[in-house]
Amino acid sequence: MEVTPMDYQAQIEYTNQNNPFMTHSGITVTSLKLDQAQGQLNAGPEQLNIIGSVHGGALFTLADCLAGLAARSNGGRYTTLDSSFHYLKAGKPGVIYGQAEMVHRGRSTCVVRVQITQEERLLAEGTFTMFCLRQPEPQA
Image (tube, rainbow, N blue to C red):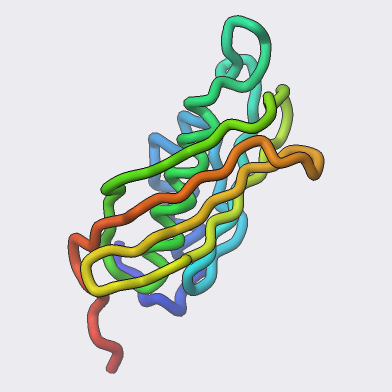
């Protein structure tokens, strides 16, 4: 489905209904606007590691998905080129929130900063460089 950059509600609904990886991972998009995306991870038993905290891969997955959504919010197509991710505190079962915000948007790459929180505690943060596969269609 192609959506215009301004059709954010349709993009949220489409992503939540048609992205099997995000659904399988327990991730839902909650907000989207130009250069910003928010979502949440419903961390249940499937997302826990052997010591009972949320697996770092689940936190990274939430961050990567939100970085991609923030990048695509202009109507283009992007893929992750590089990332740097820092784990600060352990997450526990329950809802974990993520927020992604564009730092720089160039012609072929963009940089997105993501923060992952739970109960107002910063669990992790990262920076993602996204590569533009296709520029957005010009608006009529």
